[in-house]
Length: 134
Image (cartoon, rainbow, N blue to C red; front, side):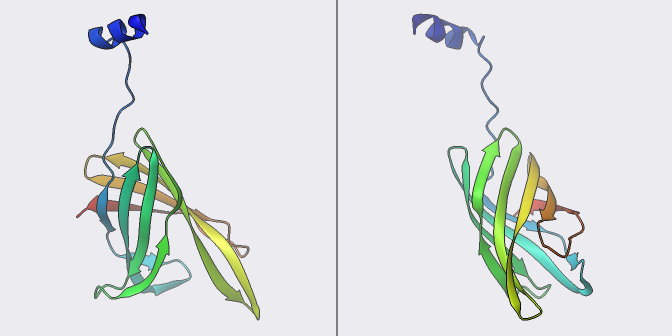
């Protein structure tokens, strides 16, 4: 509308902050909460599609070898907040159990502070980690 165009020209309309998340992000070495001697890094490869975030999460050994790679599901970017989950399966006795890992991050220039939670039936301690842009 004419009024909307005038407000845009005058800078009176608050525009949502645009945060760049595309690219590769890597964490420092993390310890597996169930086996602390097992160390790994989280490597995130993000592509943005509007407010959707797609890509992969890779867990790498300290020597750089890939342990596992998972697709990022239901990724969203809302201001400085990025959220997504991954699917994982594990054996519980003789039964295969599926669960989700939930990632919530806050972008601050070239770093993202993440909180990781999971709906694993046997429990999971909340973890936090920092990923920096490569």
